[in-house]
Length: 350
Image (cartoon, rainbow, N blue to C red):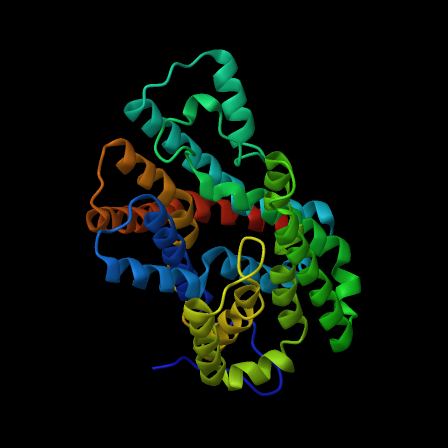
């Protein structure tokens, strides 16, 4: 049975099912990396996983949800310092915990030669803003990147800064101006897509982790927040139609039309944010006691790499192990880290 929801007049910001959808999105990211590194032998299962991964396109969904929630976080912060402090406290304790778990697993399974220089560089990059960096001496471990999914952290931080700097201007935009801004950000993504094979690899990597190609997704989320009592209220009222249209749209592109766009196809980047946010409110209020999606995201690649290192190549077995352990680590991360950090954030908010 659907939870109670407000779709006319003022939309209740707390009346959503983001907790559930974030878990679904985390599962799509896990599925994407399993398909890339330990795929199942069954062709039908591989095709189903590919469709599921494209349908939710995990990072796109996370950027969209983050964009939607960011204005409210800004509104509740009295300064940029307090805003950034809360954002960092949300992200980094979990990242640090995941790093030390990953390091312990690597030392046990890979037994790399370590000296102070290697340790210093490794700690300095992974505990700050350069999780995307992998030292050469770790390229032989697992899939070659100990926790490659964390490239999004530095991108997310850039988007936070952009949101804060331009918050007042974005809040004042008319619908036509919003269309122009999102269109410009979409064009920026297409330019990145066009030049990606023309520039040196290091330039491509910098573009990849920069906010530029991902900005249009984040802006769509912010736009829906600023129009939550008009456009979003209408979308929520017709959320089943929105979901149906998105499903048809995505399916046609998936099977029949070549995609364009940097990182994510443009047809997904422009429509998935609308679908995921509309459905989140359309389903009504369904809150979970434990928010496990962040822990699932942090630990799933660590688990996949351990399985690769152990020589486990059975895709179906790997799926069961990775999903199960990711969920367990999601609970552990939420209970041991997130909840204690939330207490700190409340202290800083006083």
